[in-house]
Length: 124
Image: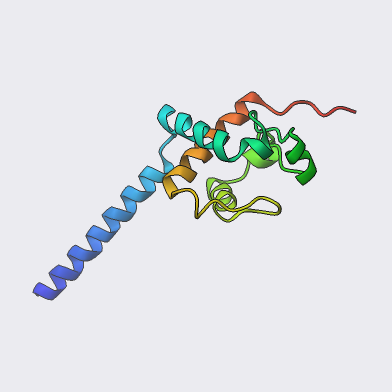
């Protein structure tokens, strides 16, 4: 009976931990997250993506980086963007070794705010 109670207790604790992790991961970004993400973005991402996320820098243009404000990027899930930031994609290096998971989350929070600034219309 004691063994069964311990197993049930372990399962319930694990489930509670998982539920807390899901709630924290799905909670909206705070202004502190966005501000911290902006600082990291300035130090790690601006060279290629530019201060507005457009990619309109000499390095960004040469590497053909994505416009982070675009619908194409903004429609990606948080998991997809987190993986791109962590592992890199195409010409973009991964930042898993440089940034903690929390730092990557705050950068993602900031990148999500770039959509509000909107992508500039394409010139013909």
